[in-house]
Length: 339
Ligand SMILES: Cc1cc2nc3c(=O)[nH]c(=O)nc-3n(C[C@H](O)[C@H](O)[C@H](O)COP(=O)(O)OP(=O)(O)OC[C@H]3O[C@@H](n4cnc5c(N)ncnc54)[C@H](O)[C@@H]3O)c2cc1C
Image (tube, rainbow, N blue to C red; front, side):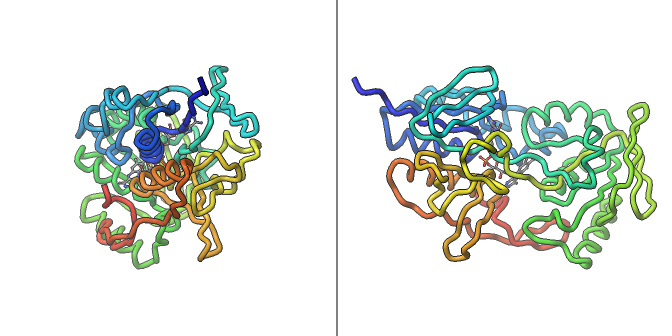
């Protein structure tokens, strides 16, 4: 009997799950496997701020129950990290020393927190929240803290501030105009954000560089270039996401900021596609690459990557943008509104 195809997807977010669904919908016989280093099943990342604030429970995070994977005959391997890909031999090396072979591979490993170069020396004092694992660690610390400093500027930081307000925490919010991706805040916009935050009892400051951050007896003291001092129980950092590609570098798969793919989401290997936050996608019209961030773009791209691996030739484009209000500032983004 011929060996069944094995379609493997690395990553259990919207890109990975829609790729798995599309594989299964179009090939009833193949083996389909999702591998993810997170031990928690597919969940809504955008609900994490409300989760850590205690406003919603674990069940509200879940996109779908485990039974769906059983019904679909999709193998879900959670808590397993892919350390290396050998695209010539078509083998994945997992951290626990297992090797997994594939016929076709979808890389959908999302992003990790971005840290500004000026903050790298303080990293051990900073808290991040990109997944379930760091959210569950952060939750008790947030519950306990009375005062929280947030170094932010991305949309997640604004959502966290909103969630923390419901907990009546004292918040210092230092935000960076270049992190408000995909828009860069102007001086006027930043001033408006500070003024609108003040009305909500939040001390907000734009583009104030951190000079020192020290910890003594669980109290963090942060000093800035403009001479301000903030004392708080916790310092959280939300400065955007960078594609998760560390484990791919050196494999032969082309990367730059993300995994380089053409407009069909194909890498330089014909049986390997990448999609979602980890992909850097070529646009033949722009003659340049773009990185898409956002839940709905990731889901769409996962589906297209799988369909193309099975023989289609669909070109991927970003979803249309819509206007969103962030503390009185109107921005155009393909985030938020499509799910
Ligand atoms: C707190 C928060 C709030 C957000 N809010 C919004 C919002 O409101 N609207 C919006 O549009 N977007 C939002 N986003 C962004 C959105 O969640 C992402 O754009 C989307 O999840 C990207 O999907 P993805 O499938 O590409 O990657 P992810 O959802 O990041 O999934 C990547 C998966 O790959 C796994 N992985 C990574 N490396 C490995 C490895 N080496 N081995 C095995 N597995 C690995 C990860 O564990 C994870 O399961 C938010 C993100 C965060 C963190």
